Amino acid sequence: MKRITPAALAVIMLWLGCTTATEKRYYQLHISTPPQPISTAPFPGTILVLDAAVDRIYEGYRLVYRLSPYQLDFYNYEYWIKKPSHMIREALVSYLKERNVFSRHILSDDEAEPDWILHSRVDALEECDQRDAWYAHLSMSIRIVDRRGKRILVEHRFDRMDRLARRDSRLLPGALSNILRTELDKMVLKLQQTAAISP
Image 1 (cartoon, rainbow, N blue to C red):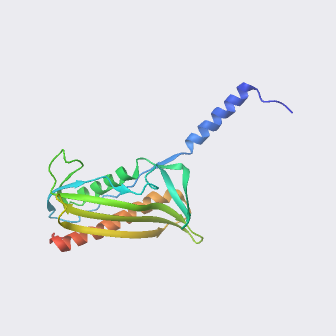
Image 2: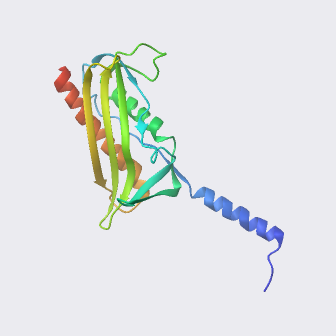
C-alpha cells in the first residue's frame, strides 16, 4: 500500500477545506416592497423599533431545524447573515417604512425622542421536519406602546407553521419572511381599526 506524502496530504486537506467553505450558505429575512403603501395617512409621531428579544436557542447564526417536540438541531452550513434579533428589527423597520405606517422611524432614542416604541419577542424561528413535509415555524409577539409604557397602541401575537413547497432548507427564509409579512399586515389592520388610520 502506497503511503501519502506530506505534500499530497496538504493538497488534499486544502481541497477539502475549500470544498467545505463553498458549501456554506447565508440568508436573511426579506419583506418584498408592496405595490402601494398600506396606509395613505401614516400614524402621527416617531416610532422607535428595538432589537427583537429572541429566545437564546434561536439567537445564533446557524439555522435551526426541529425533528420532534423534544429534539432540535442546527444546520452546519446554513447561516443567518446577522443575529436574528438585529435581522428581525431591520425587517420590521423596512416594513413600517415601505408601508407608510408611521410618520418617522428611528433605531435609537439618540436620534429623537420617540412617541411610540415597538417591542417584539420571538419564541420560535425554525424549520420543522415532519413525516409528511417540512414547515417554516415562526412564533412571535409584537407590541407598540407609548414612550412611558402606559398606553398600548396595538398588540399582535401569532404562532404559525407554513408548509415548504419541498424538503429544502433554502426555502425556509422565504417562507418565514412571508409569514412575517402577512402577520404584520394583520397587525396594521388592527392599528387602523383601533387608531382610525385611513386605509
